[in-house]
Image (cartoon, rainbow over the protein chains, first blue to last red):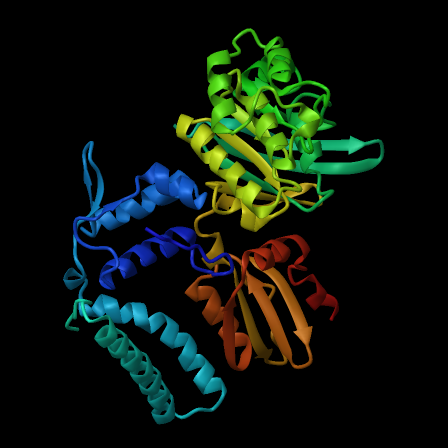
Length: 143
Length: 301
């Protein structure tokens, strides 16, 4: 599991880690049943206080996203289908908020700002489908 | 449970007429990793030396593990580990020799444990101390501070001069060797971004007093900076937690701690039109506490 802590972000570290795990599950990078590092392992890997990791794991366990199996370790207990659309939207809303502020400051009307988003989305989507056609075997997932 | 490993009450210390500590109050909870921040020359090392009983406070008191720092300095030293800033060790000794030498000072030294530590810290007993890299040097100093299973470890700027990789390695060792074993860690540094990921609590020392102390986890989202054009009669002084107020032309930037919606609306009321809110990075947060003017300039300006 790869987690990156952004040093200049104003988001507290525990929230950064929890959000990245939620995102990795919603994006299908982490799958149901995958084993995640123990509190000690992840704390050592990231050089972060063990209580911070414990707080993250406790929170994700309460949300039924992770599950602790006694003596076995900690596992992902939900798949991407279990992350509701609302929550996925909220993940996108954060970065969009910043883009909206920027668009407003630069006097870009809403229709054109929305157009920009659509263009960027299409660009990435066409690159992705191209990559998948060439790769051939990659599993297609419905959104 | 919330018993304090270190308790400091209104501690003062002066070198001659130069006042270094002017009323420090601090509680370090047992079992925590406590980040002790301050600029160079803020008095961090002075406070640590006073805690170790190397000098007598001019007023006030400090106690460690319930014992008075000065009265019971020897007893305290048996139960804590200490790593000095830029710790110098005899260069002609080999790692194994210096471990044996330091072990001689402690009746309860655990040689099996320090042998394990040599491996964990990737040291070799045959290396001469003067041949160690800076990172290895601090690993050895850490090992020497831990051999007698202290309940509390005081690390005075232990990562000073280490490159980013050696620094991260050192922090990992602190988490794995100390936090895992429930040892209280009192860790001084002048870098907030270094301390923040590892510390449960932090304190910022500046100009002889503690400017800020609290849990680390919400530090990042509690400090905010606002940019606004103030109404002519605007007065920010009644807003709690004011850290810094700066004028530039018609606009003012106001930095506040423990930012709440209530404080936001108080600020908004002083603004002629809208205001923008920005979060600060850790360096900026540190700066706001240490060199922020707390709105004092407003009175004269």
